[in-house]
Length: 603
Image (cartoon, rainbow, N blue to C red; front, side, top):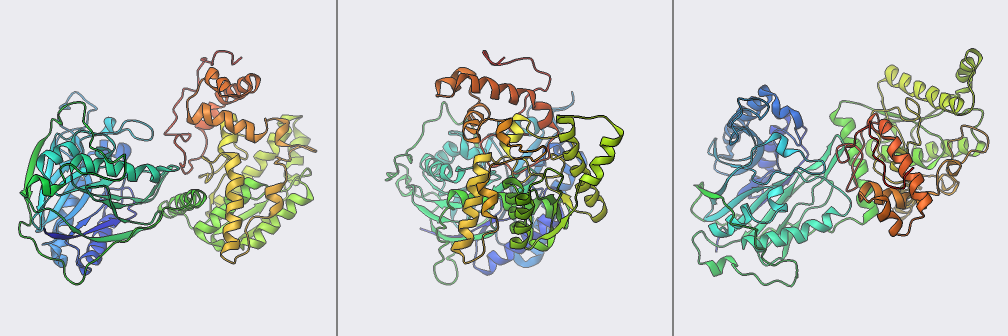
């Protein structure tokens, strides 16, 4: 049986940066080949970045992607790697997008995977299953492929698949079994959400059983607007054995030697009926025949043993839950800042838990010299809050400034008659003006610090505490903010460092401090109760009756649902932020602002 040294390049491309992404391919290919790699695999839409969204409709972009993949093939050959197959995701098209009468239902933009070999594009595969749920809109953009591409490499038949092809039974994996392949490569742009890594391994095992072949899964890593990709690339044998796994949230080249059935080997040598210890790794029967043709291309028919001794990629352990979430938030912020050309960030430091956690994330992502924290005290700001803000700045080493707002609030109140909530919101808006002024003057990206619970119920001031270009904790429930703060401090202690977040910021009752003695509980239910209702209503799409049946107080449910429904207009104007949950505000959850539907009983 031939041995094939595969190299899975878990890398961080940038949407639209075709030259930069091509350089990544060339650099990682060089590293892989220097290590004896015989098949080098890059993630979904590697050349263009992912997701490209409506760039698909721009003909100039499609043309650049198509010419760019051909140029990349030539450049790899010029680099001396023309005899090594390199798999690269990109944007292709065999017709116009479906936005006019000129569109052909069977042709259009394609989510494609190219096999680069010998200075040319030797083969192409078009993604078959197109996701159209959650953050995905691929039915809007792409036309599905109907053929499975099988490439012979080093005497092994290798089937090509892309991301969603893995998440649905039938189709390419069923066709791969029928084609008798020894290896299925699946390239991915699979965004992170909490515990998704726990679902991937059983899923890859099921597909390996379905195909009767080893599956090599490579994923993107890095941030792209609201999305963050966690990597977690892996290789799983046909019998469900985990052979290699890459670490999460870092770029990584996973090299591993695979002993695979030779092309045209008897079916029993291809593990046609695998038996595994994992109960989930059993063949699945699709609803109908796979309905895919098989296109075969030979780029290397003769087996060649890898050079040097055996290479194993190792198995990285998945991160614990809090470390996983923190890593996602740090990487999401770091890449948003870097990829959008900012050099630094600025945020308001109130001394409370939300701004403290955002500051700690920012320092971890960028370093203290690139984070500006501004205390913006008013006449209602407590001494302990001012002290807590200063203490956090001291512990983290960020650039700390104090800008009292009362001298700016007073002239407003001297010239316009305001009272109650209007005065509270005025203070928040003055703070927002100061932060935006510092952004304009010094070039910082303003970070806003509202958590998911506050965004859900509209507990924020438009053009006040909601101002900013990015919100690192937009998808983090308030109760989880506290959990992450404690975890980050405990993690610092484990590493022998000073905890970044003052204990008082964690322990004290939360307050906006916009009037004397104010607490969040004056306006909101206790967060433990609130988050329970919000999680069901927002993440789970539960109705009122479902929430009451789950044990929530009916009056509390009615109150919370009304606040959520009325706050849609605020959420539409909120800054983007890293998605970590199954349903984040923004791309995941799309509701009309003008909407008179209310859950029965929700007055």
